[in-house]
Image 1 (cartoon, rainbow, N blue to C red):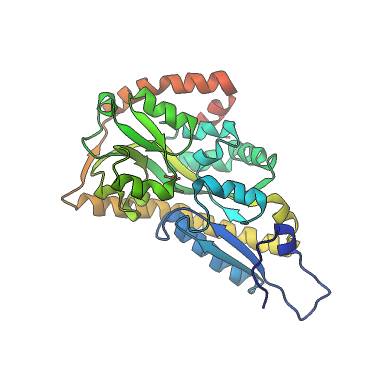
Image 2: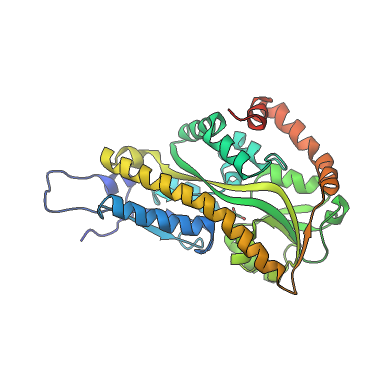
Length: 328
Ligand code: LMR
């Protein structure tokens, strides 16, 4: 059988038609940083199964969860180098490569999941993918994890003042960094796979994340004050190295796209269900305190965040924001 090689993507996927009978299996490494039992982890597994079925085993997708192959900061580089074929980083983690993507990090930008979906499957989504292509990356789909909530170790985060002086773990994103500064907090970028250890060492006091991430990784054990704020969106773009993609036979590309479409539908449904189910489980715990931000409190946060919108518009114009508010 064909040994997995860590050579360039091109050599890995070249399919030699003349070698009939000597079937080569195309290996796709799919690396991600979250737990297996999450909307992304489960959708990646689902996608792998679908690809295997649809290609009759000609393509094998190997999923590496929990950052076991590459951590946050490394996976994009690894994809560009061709050391891994598929990743699904959060939108925030794309912003270093493509600053326009920052728009998706603006707090209180999206009304609900349907709004997000309409934006991503519409013209804005297309444009975001076009920008990726200029970097040699082909985006295959947008996946969801749902809305982010706030968590803290010491006290509930309800009024903007509650954030003052606390250290917050963030993903590397300028908008998220400014968001916490506007609340008087001190943001620290920490790679997702280091968050648990950093929490054990009390390197920060709070963070924002989705229910499924904080549940699957047990972050709530350290940060029991949970505010349901739905202020930001955690979505992913599933991507492949473009030259890898271009070297795949056309029928394989078609099978992969079909599998991706099915896995994507499944992911969006799953993300919703899983976050709801796990929130219900957290509410049952004595040691977790859940608070729902009221409409009035949300307004106070929004006032604090308005400079973010002004800064984004100054830098990139208002077109993106207009298109997102009224998706086409
Ligand atoms: C995070 O770093 O908190 C998330 O982006 C992790 C993930 O991929 O869901």
